[in-house]
Length: 190
Image (cartoon, rainbow, N blue to C red; front, side):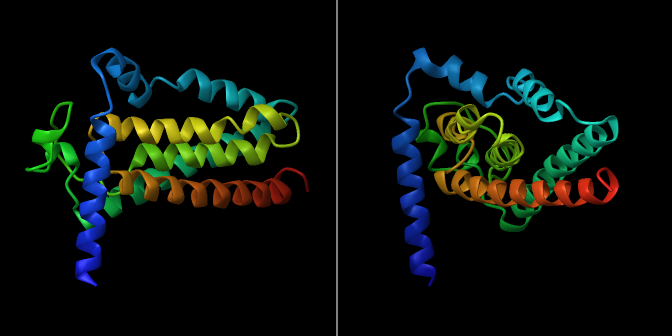
């Protein structure tokens, strides 16, 4: 079993180095912007506006609380995994950082909080807006994957960190959407 895990981690490192080294200085600013947490605040505000259109004040409050709870939950579980697994970020891993295109850092990286949060937001948004904005909302999945890839590009996460973050975010978004709908039925629509 350990040989299988070691082989998987070796492949993960190789894929990271391949993807990270595809980058070029002319694209660095773009990917640093994508990976910056505040870059997408206007998008989040716009999505909140779309989701809350035609809702009562009580429903909007429940929506905001649900979204804040989802992001907090996703972020905190991510931190628990990072503390539990203690897998160094590639940019902090001796033997890897020297081979990366971009800087160094510290801390643990399994799994990616950017990936989990962006996918949770994407899934929640898709489920909320699927009847009104069918074509537009499915852009949320590629957006989330691009956010995840940005973490590989800047050397902060291995591909498995990103993949696991995306999967966890998918589950979190689905869970919190269903929780929101159950609470809405009980406290808003009743």
